[in-house]
Length: 214
Image 1 (cartoon, rainbow, N blue to C red):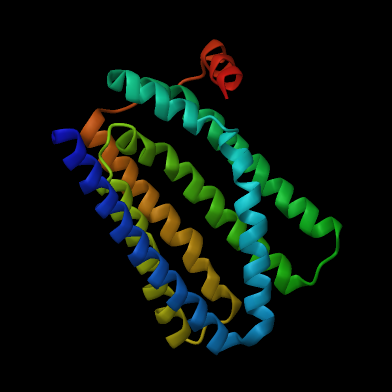
Image 2 (tube, rainbow, N blue to C red):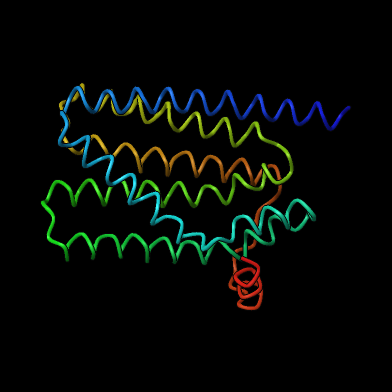
């Protein structure tokens, strides 16, 4: 009965967090559409799709493997995070640079380039945060990931509203990576308090093992 209760609680928490996030995201999109019209909204939607696809190459499919391993051996969580995060920081920089090079090479207009770079940065930063979220979700602790996911959506909406009141134009989208970075740092701090400080270092054998499993 305890297992069923935990599953039910996690399902409710995930559902509520997702609902809050989706409502805030919808309000953000409506805000953009009303302020800037169809052109910027179309550019934003395209950039979101490209960013969502590109950020998959940041984690290289390893997050699922890490979640499974942490679920089997909770004490190993911070060890694996310490070994894998340096890799993700480098892949994140590479992917964002690749987005910038491609945007320059195909000669899209300046506004679309700006939107693509900002939204790409947002997706990549948020993908890095998933490494900390999975430490909680792999242990069946869904409250923290759901809370931070909903929080980042609400903060994006609030930040965009403030930027628009200040008369910002395309730079309004800067609220996306700024909020993502802030929330990821808070999430990392929360994970550190819960599970200890990871020891960041390169371990090529461990990295190769993770990539083979992925």
